[in-house]
Amino acid sequence: MKSSIERQKKRWMTQSYFLGSMLAAVGGFLDAYTYILRGGVFANAQTGNIVLLGFNLAQWNLGQVLYDLVPIGAFAVGIIASEFIRRRFQRYRILHWRQLIVAAECLVLVGVAFIPLGDGDVLANIVISFLCAMQVEAFQTVDGQVVSTIMCTGNLRSATESIYRYRVRGNKEDRTKGLKYYGIVLFFAAGALVGTLLSNALGEKAVLFCCILLGAGFVSFYFRDKPLREKVEQVEK
Image (cartoon, rainbow, N blue to C red; front, side):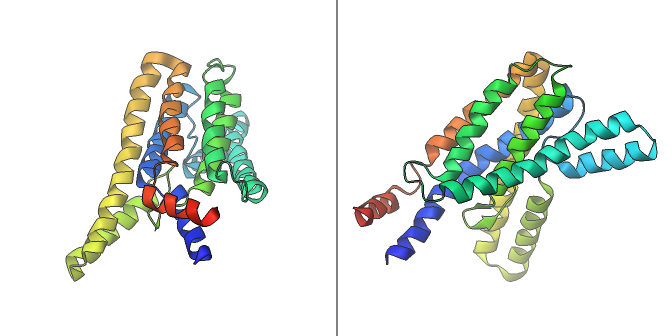
């Protein structure tokens, strides 16, 4: 009984659709922010950076090759850091380890807002790619569905696949899954839209908007499925 509630507790704390939506909006925002203001690189989608890397290698533009390698390397280190935090704080009772990652991302982005454009772009890209890697490694599911909060390709595939299955089989669960996936894609796109507008208007300070979204996600940990939370707390006493 207790082990079953522990499993439900982990789902309650880490798979909220609201939290996933906020993180997807942050992902879209940061991609737009780094592309517009920080040297034309993508903080999230390392596929794009790897394509740029190959392009610049073909042109023998070694300076740009090194620039493209920066977010790729930072992303890899971020994956390692996320796994370290999971292993180190998995049994931490005050905050869930994923909640710690959300808090860290928020605080570090405050610092990014004060990194000047131009000379500070490399540092900003390193930090943002690192944070995005931590986010994608820590949050891989939303309401039991495998979801990416920093890129759209897999989500778009899963959404379309689910809707097709619904049309063929008439299973309403497939329709629900498909609509949820499309919702995550829309939040990502909305984040990119807002990121573009605010980046053009506010410059490097625009990234502070992400802190609002992350703050909302952080607080949402405490409101996910209140009846289940109360049941968990009774068992733990």
